[in-house]
Image (cartoon, rainbow, N blue to C red; front, side):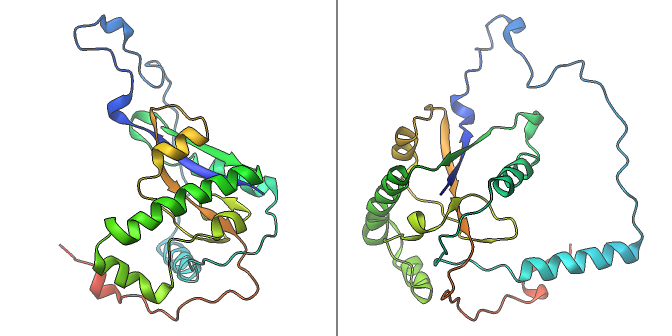
Length: 216
């Protein structure tokens, strides 16, 4: 079993020299003499663009968030490809300020769950607004998070089912648990895997296009 935690470098904690320091110490993320190469992506017809955009919409519209996972393992090559894909995301000045920590040890997974559940108990009872807790009731979300040990992987979504988890107030404790530097901050904790055979999801309807778009 694997888990993945996405960390990002805190901008205010990067070790930038002061403005009065030697400017020769300031080095860009990529070499200043990095060559420029032609960029020629495939040129598609309007029909192709429409067809591909419709297919992509239909694929994404089928995606659902689940909290009941099968413990079937995911091939390592699939996980590697997902992380490679995540690594293609754009970043300012191509700094690529991310790290993916893959946890396979069962005891470490249980420790992650313990930390998250302890903080979530405080979130539900003291930190989160009553309205937000009320909004969560139809989804039966609680401080208890069994998916953190049930799901075979904590990773980002790629053709499997996923649950986007942003555990509040857990960053420092999880960073210490995983021996990560103080310059990193937990951004997302994503359990991913196949849905349990008895998994169910709410029968939801998404907002219509005219409810979410403003044409300026």
